[in-house]
Image 1 (cartoon, one colour):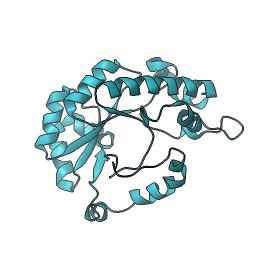
Image 2 (spheres, helix red, strand yellow):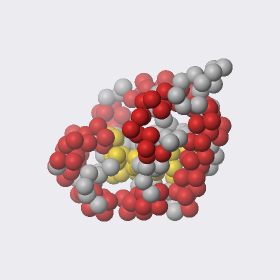
Image 3 (cartoon, helix red, strand yellow):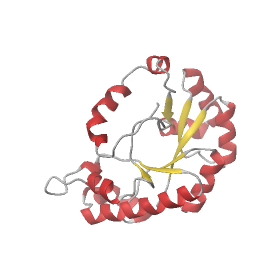
Image 4 (tube, helix red, strand yellow):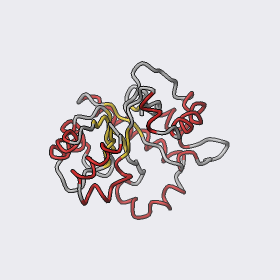
Length: 208
């Protein structure tokens, strides 16, 4: 999950490497660990269990063999308490998915600093803000090139605020960014063109 510091890749090269990344994801955890990769899991995958029993779920994740987690919320717990549970389980959290565009950016960054993560990641950015979640699929299926330019501007703004407090910001893509907007142009291409690479990380080369 932690970005490999020694590896550099252009934003355009991401597309050519995407197939290789998918193949790497299929390598068993034991093989990746043997190759020196820390093995991590995105906690959204166990969100229900985590809400019911955060301490027990985190300890079970460590027992299975994971060493790193990427948070996707922490239930009803404050950030400091969740941080302590992660540490008590013997896990490390290098990154956090956060509700940028849905909640106050300053508060989210404060929580990220409390958690001790290196990367903060947008779970999703919608052109209409939090009210768009009520009609999520309708909105993402009808997003225009101008909508993606607006999202890029939001991402740059978040990235600037994250950088100011010593954090690195990354945009988490989905399938809808790759929809053809006409003439073979995709929303993801617009995001790559319109975001500042010094503020918005789109390099999906990870250690685990």
